[in-house]
Structures are given as C-alpha cells and as structure tokens.
Amino acid sequence: DGGITQSPKYLFRKEGQNVTLSCEQNLNHDAMYWYRQDPGQGLRLIYYSQIVNDFQKGDIAEGYSVSREKKESFPLTVTSAQKNPTAFYLCASSPPTGMNTEAFFGQGTRLTVV
Amino acid sequence: GNSVTQMEGPVTLSEEAFLTINCTYTATGYPSLFWYVQYPGEGLQLLLKATKADDKGSNKGFEATYRKETTSFHLEKGSVQVSDSAVYFCARYTGNQFYFGTGTSLTVIP
Image (cartoon, rainbow over all chains, first blue to last red; front, side, top):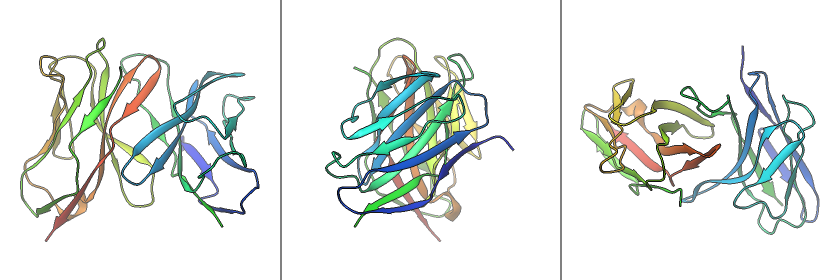
C-alpha cells in the first residue's frame, strides 16, 4: 500500500543531544514537508522540499536541519540548538501542484526531551 | 499574507446535533481549500476539499462550500456522531505550501 511512514512513533532525548526523525514515502511525490504541532498552536512549518537536493526553511526552522538526498526520504534532525523541542512532529508529502494537490500525512513522531 | 483563521474550540455537542466550524482565509489568489481531521495520537487525514469558487466538498456527511465573496470555507454536518470527536483543521494551498488553521477540537457526547 502506498503511504507515508514516520518512525519512531515515540522518541525520548536527553538535553543537548541531536536526534533524527525519519520520514519515508512511496507515493512518488515530489514535495515533502515537516510540521511541528503544539497544543493550541496548530501546525507550524519547519522545512519543505519541492525536489530532490533542494529544500527551504519554513516559519520555525531555527534549531532544525533536513536533507533530501532521495525522493522517498526527508529526515529531520532536531539539534541541541532547538530550545524547546518537545512536540509532536508531522511529515507530509504532496503530488505536483494542480487540481488534485493535497497533503498526505504520516502518523507523527512524539518527541520528548528528558 | 497567507493565513487561515478558524473558530476556536473546544466545541462540545450532543449526538445528532448540527455542527458548524467557521473558517476564513486571506484572499491572495484562488487557493485550494481543505478540511483535515485528526484523531488522538495520529496524523491528519483529508476530510474534504474544494479547488475553486462555489465548489462544495463533501465526505462522511460533512460539507463545506468555497465562498469567494466571503473568503470562507465553513465546515458543516447535519447530525454528528460520537465517532466524529476529533480535531478539525482548515487549510489552504498557495505557492507550493499548505497553511493550516489552529484546529478546532470537537467532542460529541451520547
């Protein structure tokens, strides 16, 4: 079945450590996105990528980094520079711009800093 | 700007009540509009969408009409069920990005 897979579902990190969240899709979508979700704040865009080897910062990119070496994969690294990393992280992908564009979401990764 | 404003929650309704969740967007161009639903601990799922003015999206008894004149895309359902309890997000797509509202939590009680 086609879909978008995030792993792990739950992740615990000690303060000062970097951690990488995985996002893989087999939908053959060009565009991929990372969002952060905090209670009462909806979804905020961290980074997005329209094609392989290219990505752009979203509204809250500070303290995060990404790579897009393959079309299927868009991993997000939460660095120690991120002041408040505890949150629910959602990855999404979408087909090319057009009438049928919509965002397909993974199940999310809940990151907790301990 | 490219913003989406939706009704704040939480909303609590009795089963079979009528639901309206308001959503408005800033009018820059002709964006595609969406309603997504999120169940606890899960990602977002597309509920319905509309791509041009006067289009009506519908799914599972939910409806929303793209109103260009009022820049709105309000979500409605005539008779809610307990299983509709979730968080609902309004969204627009413009300039290769999706913009989401802050979400409205709905609880339906038997």
